[in-house]
Length: 63
Image (cartoon, rainbow, N blue to C red; front, side):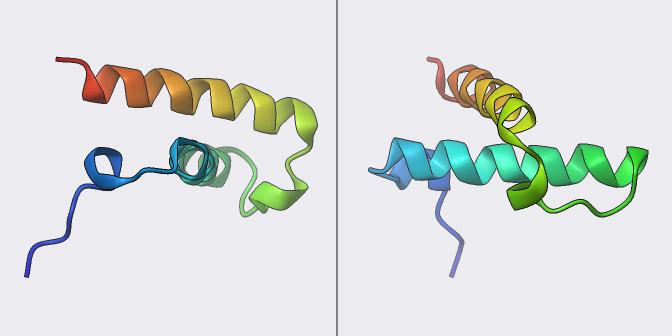
């Protein structure tokens, strides 16, 4: 069975944004400083990555 698109099927926008922000964080921080958990990123970094997640979601779901 194929996996369903989380962006297309989720009714919880905040959860999708949080998940996407964490995955973006994980993909960037590994290249710079090694593993650094999302929960330890701090409010400033979390806010910045949530903003990027919102922009990414908008770009991926625009028609």
